[in-house]
Length: 372
Image (tube, rainbow, N blue to C red):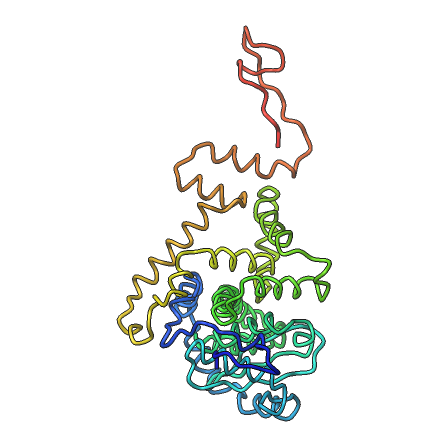
């Protein structure tokens, strides 16, 4: 699949030589937060009961018939270039059974991998028309990564529960129970997207193409008007900007979303592409599936905890910096919080009593403080 082919005397771009990863374990590319969020999800009260019940109730056969009857199935006779990408992605990640892929008429650029028994990949016409060959290859690899990781099962449950939550919104207790599970599923879903982005990079092996694809999903097909470096600067500004109010608003904004914000995904992927872990995989040093049974759950938790700790320590977000300071034993917590939320009040702080010998504009000989 990945071998060079000649077309009219010229090497075609999709078939350029790419490294293959025989027997690669999903542990090689899964984000630590993805694994820990899934473990936490499975421990959520009532989740096992709901999941077992839905596994028997979800109309998967109906879903497959729906796509078969109302979408275009990718094959060597229909959307052949997508079929080549799909088979190539499965070859690179060593996914033995190629999942069926469908193209659905929808102007919104989107792709998904769903299914309980077997995964199905669906891409919209909006996405196919938006992305070039290399960008689309990363997206196909992204969805194959979901299939290899077994994400499609929980994604299907989330889609069903999201729809169900709307129908039972008038039932107070029922809605609360479903909302709790949906919220936990969305938190895992967002982390699983980071894992799949990494799988897409392993398949496409072109970090700039992955970045362009994310940028186009955010800003449309105006590549000549956009710049990858400027796009990544947005992610840095988003993380570091504002005060504690903005940190809280970021959390509230992301809670109802199934995907992380696009600039955040681009920044996360660029960071992983520059990491030693990625380079080791490209050099052929990665965990194998045959070793998965020996993998320790405790090690996964430790890796996840370490990842979160590093994220908090390196984060420029005001709330994360506050958490890092508290963990480090920093004092004056009340003062830090008041200064973080200082924008809520417009009143100037009243000056305290001035001690003898204090200079003008100072209190007790200390320099004046900014009220923010």
